[in-house]
Image (cartoon, rainbow, N blue to C red; front, side, top):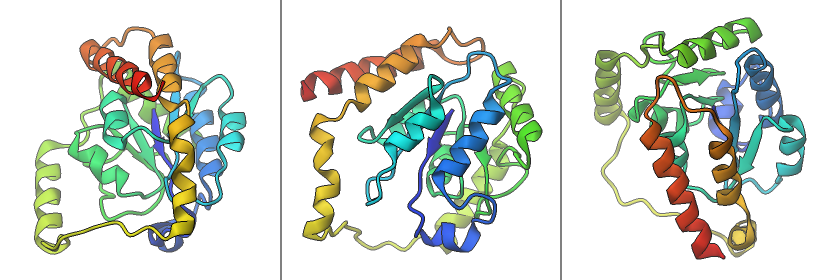
Length: 219
């Protein structure tokens, strides 16, 4: 299970988050949902612009049930995941574009019964994860996803050049990337997983190899 963190001042969180006002609360909830799923592991992806880094707190919450990573591209993580969960991040939309089962914890534009799994409480979240585990999850629905993507393109996307502008102080937030152990941690988590029953084994192996390549560059 991949969980994508959001900054607490994210407009999506401020407007749409009612149940989970922090990443720590959301991860704690997901850990409880996972407790009934044999062999389940969680990978928590931190947000690169979160000035209040809480990796240590997140690692304490996760314990031996997964890992926290920061400098791995989200699409690499989505590709490796069997299921993705967000509060209401646009990472959820990206996961849908990869046709990954999505557990949505808060309100979002893509909240629709044909696109995402429910987790209104721990039992419901565990049931959704069980559907993924057994291969009985048929979400996102292909036709509903196609219509939503076309709707997003027609009504929300503007064809202009986009670029990040970092203030000098914010560059310090990214300074830990060179010495961080994210790729090693993800490689270890994926290596400890039992062979998936319904998933593409080669997909996991490709991701592990990609982690080794990036790690060798850092080393």
